[in-house]
Image: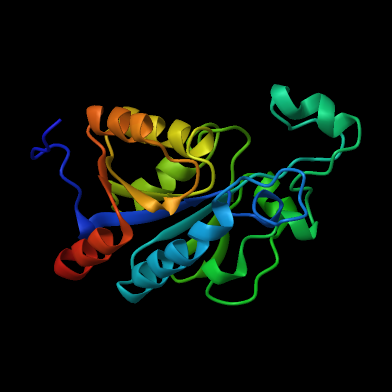
Length: 216
């Protein structure tokens, strides 16, 4: 699908959304390790640094699974109830990859689980999402609108699940969207084609950094 004045992304009113880049989803010894995630962290880190340089908003979106399973999606709830510890609040595995952060940060898990945003910098926050999509029962849409954003740049962990759900939710809310193809794990050709079909611009890190430099 060709871009037009409705779908073409705007760098100056963009925000970066980094999804689920937490240690339990990329550490080699984690039972929930998502293949390819560790390898994409350097590209995500370059994106985050660029957005900070241009003083554009960044939102780190995370999962936090209570050990009793009470807030866990149904497909994983039984496993957590039986003792699996996945991104457990306060655990090392729940923490965001340090390469993506402006400084050393420990997640304020109670604040996040209550729906609050943890501030990391002037325009950088962490947000908890209870299900796959970053807009489902969260303050993300309000946060983006209040900061004047109309464009969302997506990167992160495991395209088929949370990033893809979040991209479709952003499209439903009339955001202009970029998917950074080499800063996300689990991406495949059909997924890229399907994103393009709903007006998403799919481009790599180099193209995204050039876009920011020209228009940010």
